[in-house]
Image (cartoon, rainbow, N blue to C red; front, side, top):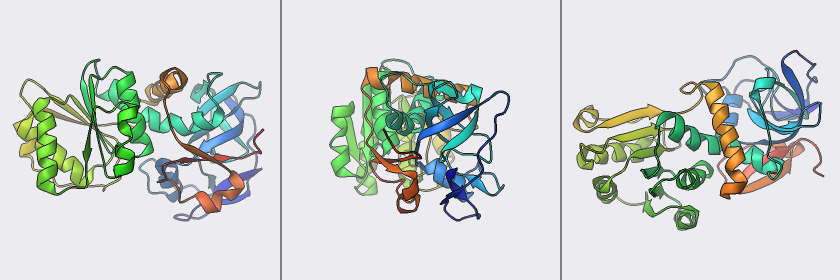
Length: 321
């Protein structure tokens, strides 16, 4: 079969032949219809993600959509190594397969599952979000952040505040549910004042996709301006702006701030899959929006570096009907 094969550590996958998986008890053989390109997929392929394996060769791709042996349309997560999602066929534990709603197409489902899960799980599993609370999404102009705005509003946030650098995208977030926006393209003192103003008014949950300088400013602003009666749950999801930050210890002593992480490892896999199912089931009723660009898997080499584009690249291993 054809697949996106990682042959060398640190090198991108290549479109090449790979052995077909064989049937195995407790697993489904899945004919793959769509697999989205994500930061996690690229990091795991490069061996730089904390959940990466050093076994080579293997097929790239953490998740996707397809059909089981009985024709059931499914979303699947975590194929059995060395198989991956970016192939004509893969092997997946039965417990990692989720039936797709009839109204949700395969490409959209593949594109929305992981970025949608990132905020849904962060809110429901880590922050223990309650309806009516205020949510601040740091890094709301990327695919995951835009979905976080929509999902927070759908789950009942009383107010959603969105931050980002892309002015054009930031201006569109009001239509997706943002009640206020903050540009990160301003000097540090102006940004701090903007953050402090919102924390003074009350912020219950921060969903952070950036880390780095903006996260540091947010945490310091929360320590300065958040009321003792309004604890802040800061949930760290992504590190687009940098893997590390220097944070004064006094920040966590000066205010009721709870610092949490959300992702593979901090949440049990069955609960992550529960969040994925919730996102997939809500996608059509909630009108969740994500831009996609479906391309043949054979074009892997031209599109592998496109994980940061506004439209999410989705590889289709077989010709689309």
